[in-house]
Length: 388
Image (tube, rainbow, N blue to C red; front, side, top):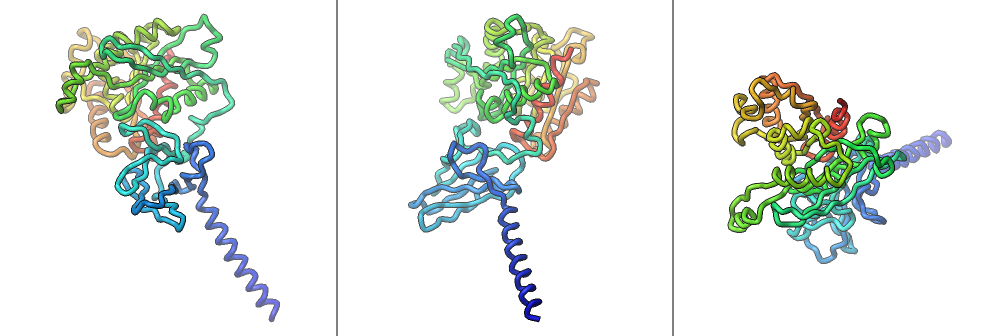
């Protein structure tokens, strides 16, 4: 009898301990891959929760701000504040800490340019993270190209990805993809948050894409007189199309070993960049044979409701069609995109269907208006272009 009681007690205690250990393991918090070297926080667990921590002994109220939601943090006796978020979607997210009403970057993370400022970013590990993982494969080079724009009267820069062996096989020429960022981001986005180079390196290693040059420039470009309007509350007119067509493309063709032909030139962008590149492409179909719009389109040629009668008006010679001009016409979005994107992209697709225009449509599963949607979109788009 005593033995059975002892055994029962042992089993009960063992089970409790095992359950507690399992509970602790189920939290699974690990330092984020976007942390600065040697920083333990922020952390991410298997559920996609974020745990942040910051030393602020004199603060009264500290919150973790991500996805438009502020999560309360609690202070210990040493002035260390700790808090965690609800589960987040897979992929990359901008976030910040709010200390007594002031929004500041988390000093534990690397900084990224998004939302119109340099701030914190964090990765929730994705089920398909292998497509942009750093692997033991041949790697291309991302270089910085600084140039002076006569249009904007300002120094500008772009980042240029050249594929593996570009600097070894010096007689070989390459097609070019011009790839644009979204609103309140800049030319660093695709090479940093987007992992463009790693996506292409892995695709090329798997022989799923053609070797290509990728140019990532800043979509904000204004003439000096237009910038003066913004100082008085007006909205300056963008000169980015002119910069692209008369400065960026000629510069890239002159300084890199490109194939300067429309069939060997593609243009794509995300969100705002999708709108910009749509207009550039439609106005310059002699320059591009492939287009990719990720989480955005443009109600071309106006910003009003799409007019199927005018979409192609003035773009082609009589009797010509978009299918004859384009090799790839690609649209994409996440299945969780917020308004207005499902409606505007859906209306654009309907218009293409009514026109009988062929296109490829990709939906990123379980993602919204965010970088995992756009990484996946680039992964799909890059496999289609320059195949002819």
